[in-house]
Image (cartoon, rainbow, N blue to C red; front, top):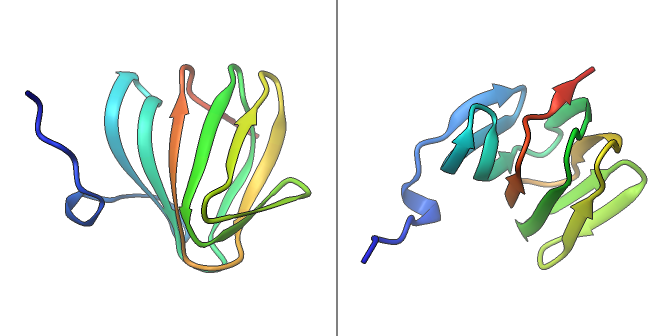
Length: 104
């Protein structure tokens, strides 16, 4: 049986100003399942989704496009959608995507 991956034990990679990624299961470069962490005020700049993405907010508060998401919220982003993410508070999410994002 595989061992669980614990949020408080992952290695975080800096991917932007106040944005950190901890890959959990990579299916190809830039795609798979990961924890994504934001410092309050952190921004994942405008990007396009070449395939759908699933995002679950574990903690915190985020603005994704015009939507506000909080701990316990789930969002499925449709293929082709363009948006940015702004952290309104320190936040942690679980994301899953089958294709890498296209940053604009």
